[in-house]
Image (cartoon, rainbow over all chains, first blue to last red; front, top):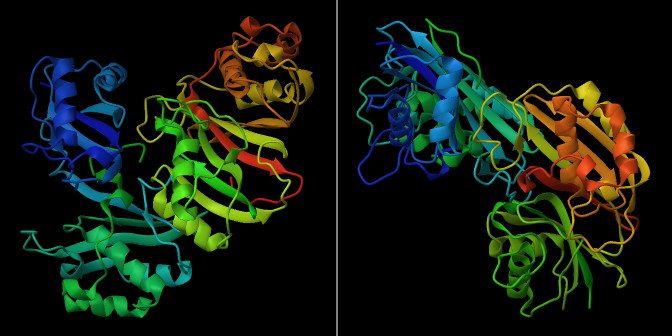
Length: 252
Length: 252
């Protein structure tokens, strides 16, 4: 049976994250339904990551064994006919039989979007956190640079996580402005529960002057959740890229 | 009584256009409700333009006589607390008593958004028309240039309009690409019923090669609706700027 790597995008507004749950609509369930319609049988679809309720994805990868492979164009087009408007596939390729979307993932990039306009904006409301006061990108980028490298990020992990090893490597963390939007882009080998949303909340503390950029190393060192910022809203978070050593993927 | 010029943005997805209607939710009704909550009385709010069901606005202007003027910041902030997430105000100023948002409007700019990616994209679905085949911007811009100037645009007016004079002046019409999006930007002194959406449909005919750029003058000359393209979906259309000779407005 061919092992397929399918890439999708989704607007997570109305979903309870990726993973199938009882009594709650999830992206995995909706995607598995579409895949079942295309292939005629219920297939076990492995996702690259758990994502929380309300989080979006510009790129999300899944792998599954299909009874046959109709080729990229037909697979993507047919699935999109069965998928709702807020979940759409855009690429598919056959991969080696031992490939697994989650276990073989070597890195991910997230973007956290902050709308920095003076007043609420209907076109950003569902896709960003609104912060209306001044944000100094230079100071934010100085703060961002401290996250890069291998650190114990226990201070940036929400309670409720059962992960034991809280050490992660951040390859890149940077803040850019595009008009009235401030984008936090962070790429790493893995992320703890709510880690990017807590880092984003810490950047809000930096913007406020409550935390200084140079305090970041101390916050990391403290390993204490209470020294970091608030967990910002899920709606501002986008999984933007997924990396595998074996395959090169477009998009995000 | 102060005459106020208020500027708003709205995501038109769930509204039956601007103008109050029986049995259908409109932007005017929702805005008038918010204004009533702020000022304590039902005020007659004049809009700059009728917009159709599903059309969006990056900038939309209204004027109304208010019992008092709390200043820009308080007016906008208070209204936004009463407005839903898909309609938000962002500017307000006091204008002369004879100012009327519709009658004093001297020009408008619309943007029609076409998503030109190969597959459907959840983040463009509500805000653009999807055309997946090749679009040649040079040919489209040659077509666009023929719309500029003063012409009888009867061929670009849907049936059902009771307008007698179909002559309008287009100041600028141009097509640009931003990544996978193709944007048609058109600025003029006024627009006929569905005019921008029919022009956008004619650009699709040009992209298909069904119509040549150099055919545009003949289509205009024909004054016949059937020689122009289809009326593209409302969801791709944005009112982007509103011009008054008396006041300078930001945004859009």
